Length: 455
Image (cartoon, rainbow, N blue to C red; front, side):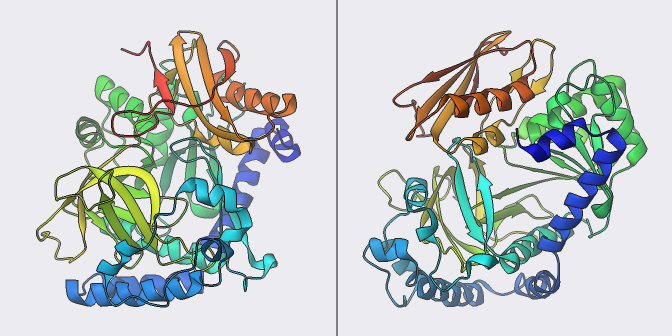
């Protein structure tokens, strides 16, 4: 645990609200500003371009990224990239870039003309538990959030509306055993609720606070929102009525979507993106998953790297346009999806996906009955871990299988154990086991969380 985390955990709750708000103000400064507004204004217009106009726009932006890639040591090490392409179809002639390539390259993924003092770092554990650092600057972050703001407008949400969020950050100390299990981000009019304190005994306090907060938007992982929705239906509550529910970071199953629609009596919008900022996919007003063509190019490929047919599941390989600091060309995201063809009733000529697969983390149930869904934040704390899988094989026991890349010191193991303990609680027995490799599913995915006792 860092010194800052210790200070936060020991602070009184009123001070934690202020700390969360100060951090929220910092994020708002980074994510919003002139660049974000300018990008949003452009996106409001470009969403109505024809398919041919969008392809020309994509080709121009692709060639701009190829030009940037020529000054990146990683691509120089790999033999360079062409000066330009004549069509999007020629993109398939370029090699695939994988997460392992980025991890090994480190700062060699950054263009050489970028000043170090301008760099921002984004750390992600991803769905496979492999830690990765993504480099960008403030302008890139603002362009990224312009797409999210356009998506929220599709859902009827405007900037400044009240938002209630379940996320992966620890905003409530793990040892806290009574409400409030949330903190207020006053800078962004947001209520941040702890995903790690959900249990049958606490669920009522969560729904009471959501009812009094009256959020316009409810967002979070499906695995965190589902217990709330079930409790709402079981108790017959009708006082939690957001304008929209927005989900991300996990696969939204059809039955869970129906659950949310019944519980909250509002539309549900799912969104897919990545910390690497290579793709942005979101549902429009009519429920279709649209690929934002201004954000990048998405390919859906079979295992042999040939294009998958419409309706056929394949891996997502994406080329991002918005980050010239760390241009990623044909990046294999590790996620799966299938394409769908034909026009959408919304009138946008965007490419579309039928389903997004691959982020099927199980939910760990602690001995106290708490549900713990997303666990990938723990892998950010230990850089020497290559990938991990967490298996719950008893009510009070989990086994963490870790593939180690380099030295895994007792101190690092202690850090990892502390991160796990913070989320799984004092009653869970935890074993960390080093393994040479982890098995994949038939679809080539690694299930990073597996619950063997969950019914």
